[in-house]
Image (cartoon, rainbow, N blue to C red; front, side, top):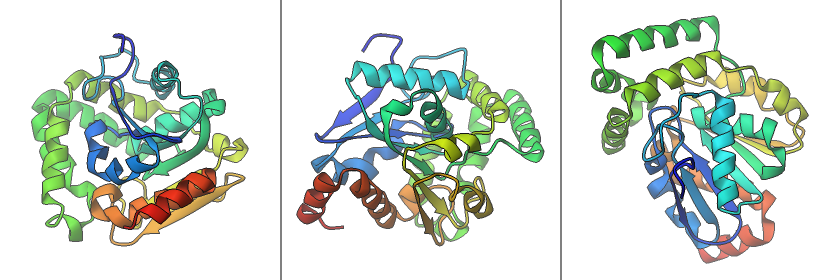
Length: 271
């Protein structure tokens, strides 16, 4: 990798599935979730700019992050892929669908949305920027992560919460502030959903505080071809809160894109 490319991990062979993490996360988010998929798919997990081991950027806009992801995938000779974006990673995925539609076999909005921030959410972003500047990343992460999980899952997911807090605390303040402002200012991409010929898969937690169920219901019928999976008793972190069902759902979507490969994988593996 050259310095202008993003950090990534790569494992397995077969059709490519690319995973993008969300705000204050890293590619480590996907480590355990993707391991069973590596037997049949080429799994690529990417650190978005300024996160994990990727270089810093001065432009955290979804459009620029999309370009950096596209350049990285080009360097890996990925011609087409299923792109899975969690939360902010889904915002970047939608920008890729708009700018580089030829790259996508499919797009999974994993607890994510094409809608712009509401005025209320924009005010929350601004208040969070002020909080981080005054109190620092550690104090912010101590209160940010746990509420992303459904209340009923916080004890059973204590290790995951601790892991995500640690990843968040290692994220540079410049990245946190830049992404908060970029998410606040991102454009409405529902038109991308309406006009794309790329199949879109929505994974939604019924108790998601960040992407309310109503927002997913508003969008899931917009694409020409779409599937939606609603997870009960799950908040914003389905990869931890209900790993098996979430992975099964993603595999089912992949099966519609890569039927022969996915069927071979299903025959060889059980969940």
